[in-house]
Image (tube, rainbow, N blue to C red):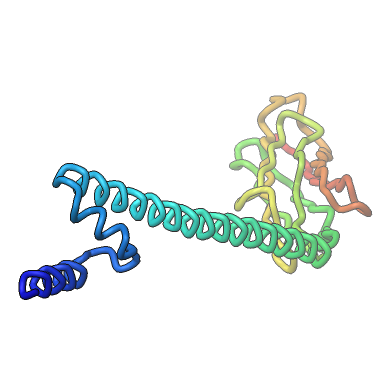
Length: 206
């Protein structure tokens, strides 16, 4: 009788020490009667199953996080693209067209002698429009006359550009003596003034 009680007591202690709480009493009894090799295989199989289940849950959570991140990125790209398009559209709408304005289209240098230095004059080109004024091309009526803008060929709205024109009265030698009229031609992006003609007049004497 005492031996049976001790056996029952030992079984209860072994049950309390069982690392798998969901293992049935019948399974524990079978394990008690099995050899150590079978016991080890059982617990290893149980542990592997739990690890696989844990890994499956982890992968599911990771996949959900990646999916959410991709969706968020796509939404941000769409919002950014729409905002950029609206900004560009508003910018182009606000700029509008440029308008070129020249205070004096003609300059009279008066009497110049061949012994004098080069004749120089600066024309003021103002942009009274709301878009950038672009000077696409500059040409002159004769090789004795050159022209260039001081600060580049683009004039912002409300700003003034300075066109420097140089006339060389010695370019043609004695044949160039007398009344001289030279033209400077500007091609612009002003829809109402696509071509501007500037005039330089001089009386060349020996």
